[in-house]
Image 1 (cartoon, one colour):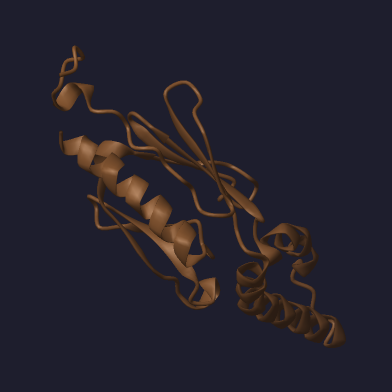
Image 2 (image 1 turned 45 degrees about the vertical axis):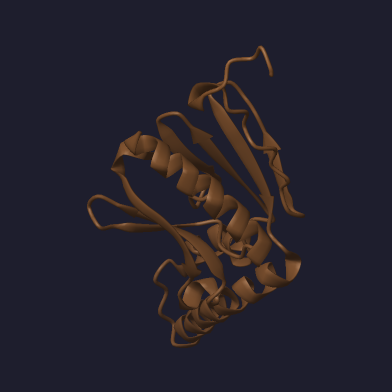
Length: 172
């Protein structure tokens, strides 16, 4: 017999073995999940975006050809980082918030309060996500937010499992 007390409060945290491309860090107040999106998935994500940018360039050329200028030159630079997407994404799972770094156009973070999350699921993205695997967060207001577009199957299962445990702990 062991002298250590047994019970639900003393149950050790299971050892997590993250898949390739996922790194866990434990800063104060939560877990930081760093995800390296596979290169092939990022290239698939770039195809619809590249078509979109080419359409804009064709429109600009037609505007200049017909001597009509609408200020299209303002559009160019913000599309460059957006075109290929981020190689690495960061997800912070805290006690009260879920924060995804670098998902906004100019690098801002998306912060979702955990009491506003209704469900989290893994699914396929839409056309502009090239139908790649994505973590989808549905809020209480029925609005959906795609996170970490382009994950591999192993990465998606690992992160979804952790987010499901986090979501269940909300109700506890």
